[in-house]
Length: 395
Image (cartoon, rainbow, N blue to C red):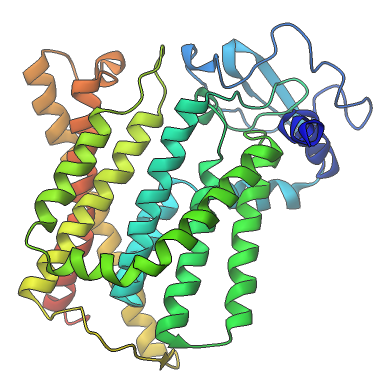
């Protein structure tokens, strides 16, 4: 068993998967064993990459792409199969902020409030546990060489567990479970969709060279266990979040305490900022859920309806798209404004220019900056956007 775990934790399976999908380091081009160079001096991994700013990859020339790897390592690679390249690059984006900030609000605005609430709560819990686990375990990411690394920002973080795998598993299967309880549709179809979604995201972490096989399996399993443990309490948690008079206070105070007491590292890692972003968005959304239930139509009922998905008409499609684009415009505008306002106020308070990246990484700046900005985003998505939808006749 220990030998198997050692193999799954090593870089060679990741490199072999990349070669099978047509991704090679420049100069190898299908020849050589991925195991070669695994022990070379100067190999790059996520444990030490944080001290070097990552530069963006350059454009392709005759199939060769290049970029600055961690520790200043110049890394060029050759793509021989562009189908896998774009498939897994897209799949990797399904675990990034752009996906969360569009998909989760879309569910809230257009499908079902209760489904969205459950997904956001599960996502926040799972991501916090995953991010903290990385900085407690401190397992390095795959070595480069032999692995080709396509992402540089996340290489400054540790690897175990894969939070992409955790989020993909949590979001896809919590959506399946929540909609199964609310709507009538073929369960097998939903199960296949959830499995395909989570699998694509998991495989994308191997293709991009960001995680070992063990990181990905561990992330998916942790998420599955958390879903099993939390599922019996879903309705109780949802009811308390909507009806408890202490909900707004606890929704702000508890995440803030967790962010300020995030595990300390010897160097800067984006994990604390990312965790604050997630908890802030979840806190703002939770306060919005509570306000909507108190002062709008109550969302909680003890009945469990089994509704079928309505037939999509052209008029419904127009309304859905209008809700989405209006909502996303407000959400992005809120994020842009709050970033400028909060960062300006913190810069004035702590006497630093807003362009000072090192100052923005300090605990007393990063946590309030990220938390206030994204809690405003979560609140805007759940309160302000629905109000605007009502004013525009899009409800």
